[in-house]
Length: 134
Image (cartoon, rainbow, N blue to C red; front, side, top):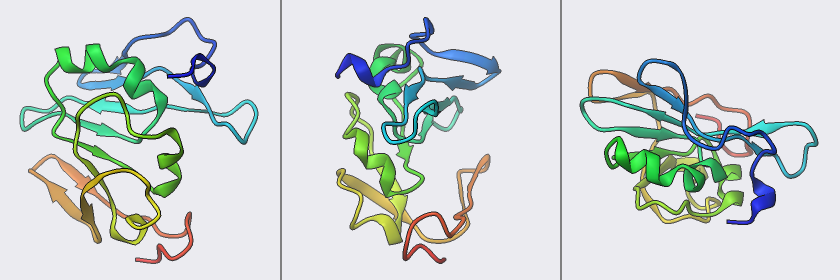
């Protein structure tokens, strides 16, 4: 992974401020100066889940795997594909309206409000990307 995708912060591994939720290293948003993005690892008995795609996944891949192989990566919308597939073997899920534009290997989609097991609810919020009005 190119080193210029990672934040200049000295925080390079997983960071936690809430039990069970780990923040990955921040990376600059390439088209908006001063704005960073990051992914999160939600640790769950039913299987860990990564939320958002960012370069921080690849940067923290070893630490992520030490906590258990994640069962899925939830991609918020197709813009997150700009960072490419993370250096981690994890099934990728995205809203069905964004599937075609998401240039990543998609394992599954969601289209409406739904629960993953009994502790995480996916709630689509339309409007950020074109054609995502559900």
